[in-house]
Length: 135
Image 1 (cartoon, rainbow, N blue to C red):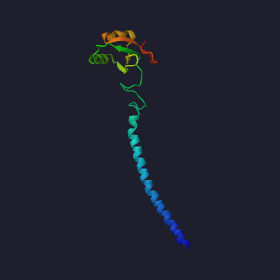
Image 2: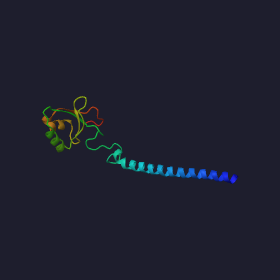
Image 3: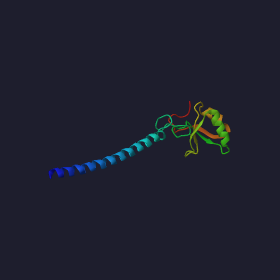
Image 4: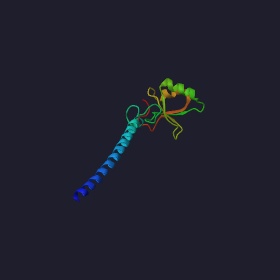
């Protein structure tokens, strides 16, 4: 009689172990799928340089050293050509002051003002950029 109870107990434990084993296998498979998806999505979370938040052209990762208010008659084609010629980037804008933040590494404020000519009404050092304009 004790042997019968023991075998019933072992049968119950064996059935429980089988049930848990099947569930564990399913859970491990699901965890592996989730891990695979996470690894596949890492490039979306990390910038192209492999650093979180690494900025690329056009992204808001840095501030522009200059603020420029463009003339009302400035056309996009002329501005695009100017930016290509001077390796300039429009970093952000328009801001609350109606200006666009520009990054033009090789020019100082006076040279930028002269280079923009009739394209810009106002050119100034960006007061909110810690690096400011070029010297």
